[in-house]
Each structure stands twice: as C-alpha cells, then as structure tokens.
Image 1 (cartoon, rainbow, N blue to C red):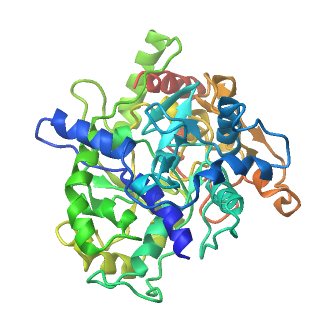
Image 2: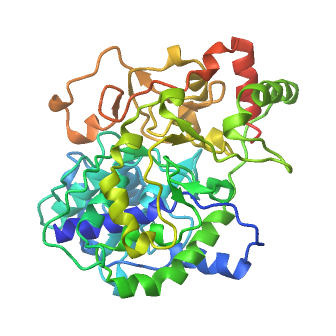
Length: 448
C-alpha cells in the first residue's frame, strides 16, 4: 500500500486546478519560482527504479524500439502506449508526468501526467491530458520493477483521459486524524467519487472557487497540499506552503493557445450575438472587459451526471475542514451542482463536460448527437481533430463491447456512458438553437 501511495501522491498535485482571480498585480519573480518548482523540482520520493521505464516495453506484447540503441524511438512508443507527451522543459529524457525522484533516485509520477497535454503535436503544461491511461502506466511500471500491480480500493480509471484523483485525495485524507497524525485504518468518511476529465489550468486566474463543484475557496493554497500528504508530516507541509503559493502564481499566469486554423470572422460575430443571448449568464463574457460569474449551476438545472457532485460526502468535507488544510479556507458543506467553467481555449480542451463524455462542442450544443459508446483516438494529432464540430473524431459503437474479452490496454480506449459517473446527459441548453445558430456559436468559441 505504501508503494501505491507513493505512485499517486504527485498526480494529486494536478488538482491544483481552480485558483481565483487576484486583485494584485502578478509577481513575475513568484511566477518564475513557481514554474521551476512545478517543472524542475521533485517533491516526493521515487516510486519505481529508473530501469522500470526502460523495461516496460517488454510487457507490451509487441516489438518495441530498444531504449538504449534508439532512445527517441522508445520514448515515442512509450508515450503513445500510455498517453504521455514529451516534456517542453528539461526532464532527464522522461515524458511529462514522470520525474526523477527526490535525491535523484529512481522515478516518480508528477502532476503533468494529468495536466501535461498535447494537441496538434504541440505539448503544453496546463492542458488536460485527454489520452492518459494511468492504470496501465502504474501496472506496467510496477511489473517492470518486479512487483505486483498496486491494489486500489477504488476505480482509478476505466477509460483513457479520465482519472479519479478526487477519490485518491479522499483516501489519503482518511488516513490522517484531524491533527494530521497517521492512522492504521482509514476513517469511514463516506466519499464515493468517480473518474473525471482533467480541466485546463489556464482557467485558474478567472475563478473564485475551485474544483468541479466549486465548494472550495480558490484563495486557499493549503487545499492543494492535501495531495502530497501521503508522505509528508504537518511540519513538512507547512514548510512547503510558500512553494505551493508560488506554484499557484505560475498556474494563474498560464494562457490558452490560439485556434490555429482560419476563422470566419463574420460568422463568429453572429455567433457572439447568439452566445451573449444564451450562454453568458453561466460562462461569462470575453475580451478586454470580459467578466466571469463563477456560477454554480444546480444539478436539477444542469442535468449532467451527478456522481461527482453527490460523491463528496459531508463526512469528508467536515473532516477536511477540521484539519490544518481547511483552517483558514474551509470548504462548503452544502452540495449544489457544478461550476460552469470559463471557455478560454475551449477549442483545445475536448472532450467536454466534467467527465469527458462528449467528444465535440457540436454534440454539447445538440444532445441528440452524443454517442453513447465510442472509441477514443490514440493521439491528439490534428488528423484526429474535427475542425467543423470542434473536438475529437471518435468511432461511435452501436453496442458496448465486452471489455472482459479485451486486453486492459485495448479496453480503456472504450468510453461507455452507462458506467458510473460517465453519463453524457444534461446541458441541453443548445437544443433550442437552430443548426445555423449552433454553427455560429462554434465559430465564435474558436476565437476565445
């Protein structure tokens, strides 16, 4: 269990994903310190030996490039296998998501596994990773190290691109008393959270509350620190708080990439008019005078899969609030619904909804076009990108295949909306628009 916790702690750093707007000017020195702390420093001990990275290819059942004779070829094959991406920063030859452990010993996982994404061949810190197969990565690195696969008390991910970091955080917190002393057995806090899509970090500077349910004040730095508590004492967490404040400053400085293809300006302007009439109350306005309402939409109104909102128990929230983590910025005990996200860079953040259940914006705006079961693409190259519908080209399946007859690697390409937490219903507001209006709104969204 200790080995398993070591592998997951830094993923949870990736839940630094909803900081608030700040009235003060950004501090470029703090931003740079945060960038270095996030991308070039190790915060937890190793989970696997360095050899595990090179030996993982032996488990694939297909021939793979030799990691010594062809390190670049092996790296490309490794990344494609697990849905990782080359690091756009110095990283010892490892992809985003893996890092040399503290003390320069072995490798660990870090938050870029989930928050280091790629689109059209360009890799970004802060773009949600929509290809990641975290379970396969954990299992294979452990097997390559000569160990059994880690046993999880909950579902980590059933499909590529989703991850259950929320339940990992809940589990780690259940192993601490309110004074942060360690427990031998977890507290029965009652949380039951599902796997989710990873949001973009570049939304952080616009938000007042964090996480999909918007129940935690985004001014809190400590809330992000629960994700390293698996191996840190309370004194060590307190010592790390200034570093996490710098990381938050860096995340709030990130900006989305611009849409890389031609945009019909006149059509986009018509779409802006439709958007302002139908969408701004929840998603805000954009441009120099843009405003974001940080609105939490009730479940009965939004109608999207409720498992995430309902899975965060009062027992868990109360326990969190009673610890140092929630001391100055407690989480709201009342469950309402989901926070309507900002839409900056929405063209790059497919698939959509909080669980990644809808492949395109077109299907968000016309619910009858959402596939119930589909196969996700293997890469985020533009050959798999739909410029008209804006999102990923997926393969709709008439019936869900029997994943028990498939290898785990193949099975996790299948997205089945009948699974717990993966429903694709709700957000039917676009159904009332005409086809022309929906097309115009999509064109406008490309400009954000």
